[in-house]
Length: 279
Image 1 (tube, one colour):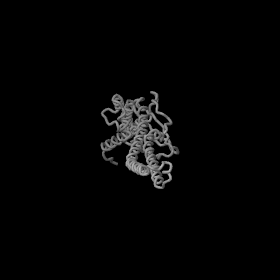
Image 2 (tube, one colour; image 1 turned 45 degrees about the vertical axis):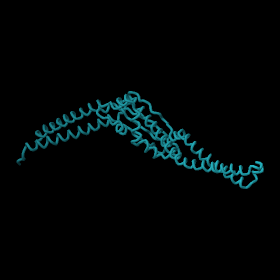
Image 3 (tube, helix red, strand yellow; image 1 turned 135 degrees about the vertical axis):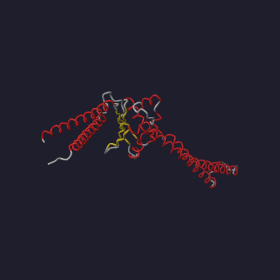
Image 4 (cartoon, helix red, strand yellow; image 1 turned 45 degrees about the horizontal axis):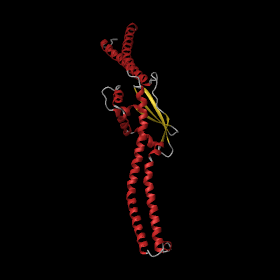
């Protein structure tokens, strides 16, 4: 009995080893042949007074990824899509290879981008920051324009009031042409009209200044974030090892499962071939 078990056990070990080596060998070749990925990061600080989660959501949005895609020149697009043969959805590739990591217990955010080209990763990581800043500038500009549109009817109405009061004051002066100007200042009606004109003119000046101030808001809005670490192109040897290790680990597991399944199949067939054991 022992002499018959030993060859069977050796056969099962041999089958397991062959299947394991074959599957794992394919996994090793696949892992070594896949493009090396590089990563570049930019760290920014969200300034006080701005909602941190709102900035994170903005960076992660499809809108920003879409604008980054439009900023890539034609030659950059070809280089960008080179590792992804058959795919043309630049926005989807951007979202799949970009990670946004808020740093705990701080107002810092790390934006990481992975790509097979060392120069592309730094370029794309910086484009994400540029588009976030540009988005904020556009938002503030749009808000300013809406406020200007709301103020314009008030300005026109106030201009009309100033013009009407000015005409009333001029008409009062004309009706009292025989009175010296210095003496006219003592008349109550003149004082009322002059005070009203001054108040209405001040209100008009205030509204005008509010409109003018909207044109100077673009600069300060750029200060809602501050770049701590700018992205740089990694060295050629600084590729990511983790994707290769994960690929090898998956290959190892697949080889182990394949080897065990082959042994179980062999054992099932050999046990059928023996038939029932007669005592």
